[in-house]
Image 1 (spheres, rainbow, N blue to C red):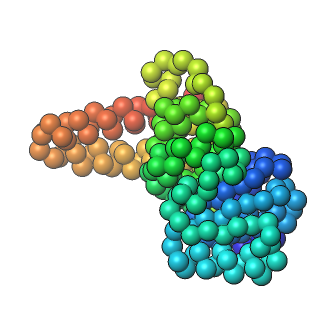
Image 2: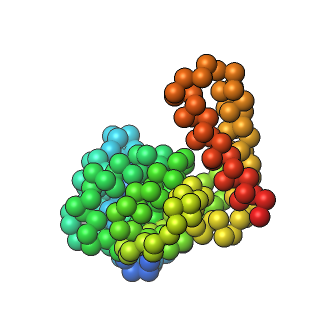
Amino acid sequence: MNTEKLSQRLEAVANYIPEGCRLADIGSDHAYLPCYAVKRGMIPFAVAGEVAEGPYQSAKSQVEAEGLNDKINVRKGNGLQIISVDEVDCITIAGMGGALITNILEEGKEKLGTIKRLILQPNISAITIRSWLNKNGWVLIAEEILEEDEKIYEILVAEKGDSKERRELDLQKELLFGPFLLKQKSAVFKKKWLGELKNWQRILAQLENAAATEETIEKKNELIEKIKMVEEVLDH
């Protein structure tokens, strides 16, 4: 992977970056994504943010090597602290856990007022991000699921807007599976949820042999509900 040819995962993220926007790529690593977007003329300006010294230096070196110092600003800092209000229009956060991405968004809420689009690629726990978006006035406009190097990734694209009222069960399903991915039901989607189903069934079988405490009963009921939802989705 380099700034000419991104990984399949990052290329999918890049496809959702609006033409001509000002981008902040949080957790930019080698700054491949902003370099790629600037070099292709997709965007005029980007901020590449990194919290750790090693990746920060890697990003700086990459931007310098590409001769893009005038168009990509590499900054060291935590989450959205590296940008100021109204500095960018679009934020990408890729390659982290859903809980960490949600935490970054929550802690940087005051920076999101002028943001037009969020492009988020969690490695795990996309449901955490969907729940946060739903509660904070963001609506999913697109989703993608793909497999690369035997790992399954989800990409969530959100813009500001009011979520339409949904029945509680429908909302639970949409948060867990993703409203767009649920409609598409691609082969990768089915593979992911078959894997989750087997894992939950295995855990449930173990809990059947555990002592019947309040905690284990609650956990069993939660798993039974999830298993039922997955089975329904995969059967239809």
